[in-house]
Length: 217
Image (cartoon, rainbow, N blue to C red; front, side, top):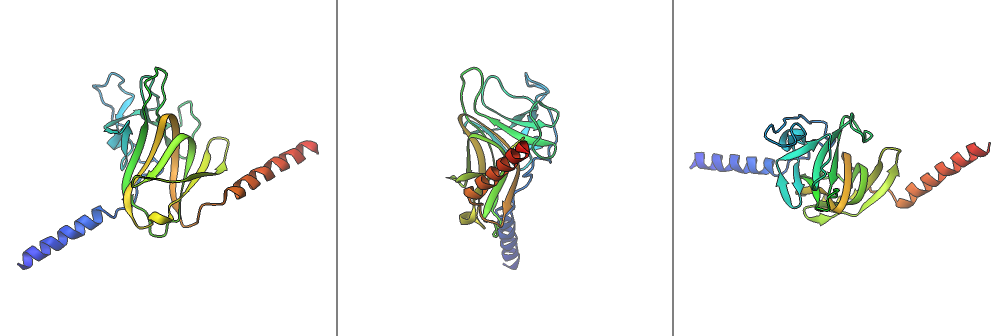
């Protein structure tokens, strides 16, 4: 009886650990590339478990075992991991994600990446860098309201209120709408609330005013 109680306790401990893990590889720097040699696009197709550990890649609503490396698909929606030696400018570090639900043959679909984990109990907002063109961010199936809170020459900064989900477990999903694209990097949870949009626009307006002043001097 005692052995059974210990076994049940250990099983519960393993269950709780497995269902309360934090999110990993939020900047996509843990990539290693193992090519599928049977693919017609070898070496461009790499196994997603190696390229984006912790994440599941989706094309349409179906998970896929491979993602593209440093290339884009011309025949359907795709998930690509892009390095700094590609035509796209870097965002942060060596790698970022490109999700494409648009292509050049008319075969439109959606693409996404998701990871199941627990939102930190202290988190009030979620931020990420990239470009959101008809992109969708959701947690546990609920769409998050995303606001652009900053801008740089190579990427925008986006924030979403995550306070209602603090301490909860579920899938964090970044996906495109039909014909949409999304570049993504440097995902972070923050203890600060989402900045007011007016603060961002006032800051941008101030930058434009300073640039105008310099030009007039």
